[in-house]
Structures are given as structure tokens and as C-alpha cells.
Length: 165
Picture 1 (cartoon, rainbow, N blue to C red):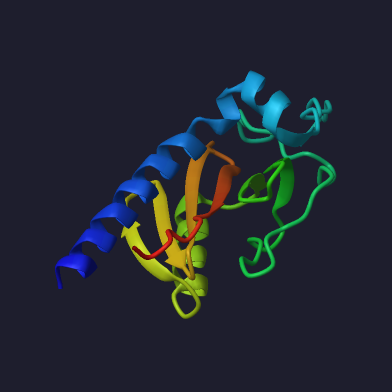
Picture 2: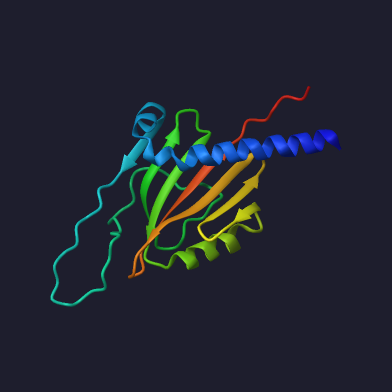
């Protein structure tokens, strides 16, 4: 029982540390340049039109950036991949998307879609965290505007198994 508590505590600590590290990965250009392959598409500018449109702070890219979706994490329908970063050892992946949908619908989609294949570890208004077979997954809503367009990211980390003593 003590070993189980130790393993759960240690895993929780590793998960929390990993979550904090992946949360900062997109803001660390130096680390991205050293440790990852990054493909970022510039956001297109708005075109002028005679028809009044809702105010939009976010712009959806026209096409996906180079990269790949996670095999066992479906993409929200209609979303466009705007950032793809993968560590050189393949244990960490950060993917960012834009979708023409409210953040609450995206949040509900992932909560309901992943509940049968991943274990939900925590959920708040902005972030869902899951685990499965030594992997941790965080889905975080980054931004939403009035139209609505939402920006969200998926962080995946494969945790190395600790040798038994």
C-alpha cells in the first residue's frame, strides 16, 4: 500500500511538473529552436467586404501547418492546426488549433470523446487533463473571441517508466 501511495504521489508530481513545462513550451522560442521541430503558419489578414461582420480578434489560418495529429486524440471537427512542435526524442508534442466554435463546445467535445479511452485526471473551465498508459494529455483553451473563434492546444507527454527497485 505504501508503495502504491508513493507511486501515485511520484506520478502526480511528475505530471504536475510536466504540465508546467508543456504550458510554457509555446512561449520559449529558444527551447523550441533547440529541442523541437516547429512549423508555424502566419495568420492571414482579414479581407475587406461590404457586408458587416462580427468583430474578430482571432483569425483562422487557411490550411494546416506541417505536422500530424495525435493518433488516439481526434481533432475537433473543422479545426485548423496552427502550431506543431515535437521534441527530438518524441516524448512531448504540442499542437495548437483554431476552430470556428465556442470554447465551451470544444471543451465538452474533448471531455465526452476521450472519456472512454483516457482517464480524466482534472477539469476546470479552461483545461482538461487526462492520462493513459504512461502518457499525459492536456487540452487547454487559449483564447476565444466574439464570432466565436476559439484557439486551443493539446499537450502530450509520454512519461518514462521508472525502474522497480
